[in-house]
Image (cartoon, rainbow, N blue to C red; front, side):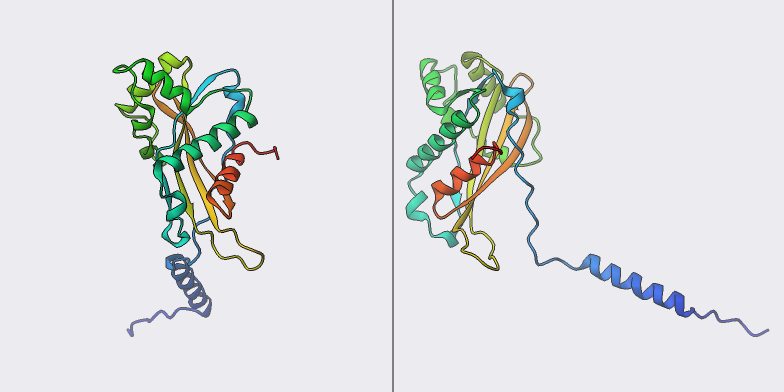
Length: 222
């Protein structure tokens, strides 16, 4: 008996061709950068009436393409100005929270030397990593000790500020830079991060971009 050879029908051939195209499409890398997640609003309703510590910013960086070395190169001056913008805006836009800003935290630390760590030396920038939920020691212990003197349990940490060149736009005048402010909220009683986001804002200078980024944390206000 002659062996029977099975030949694919036209329908099977068409399905195979479509499956091949789908596989090739899945494996093709997109040239477009991933769309960033929207900024999560600050959970002020749950913080109303609470004393919340606002730690100093410890990390500011700018892409080389911005040529902002002369603007943000003086680290201490830049950090102090950023702290002032963040604290002023949060106090004005979220008055239901009793904010304890960087200046007051430093004062508390100076009054308890050897007990409370310097708020500027706590090493908070690593909290920018999105996979961190449990705050490790010694930072966990440092924050818990600090809040024992401040009163309260929550700490809002600006973990890092990065200025980036925004993508090209088809029309209109582009912003010079996008400010990306990484922010986390820590419950020091359990040592966990309960909320995090990246606040974004655009501007022609660092301070305008940062101002708009902080404002995005409290949407609905001008």
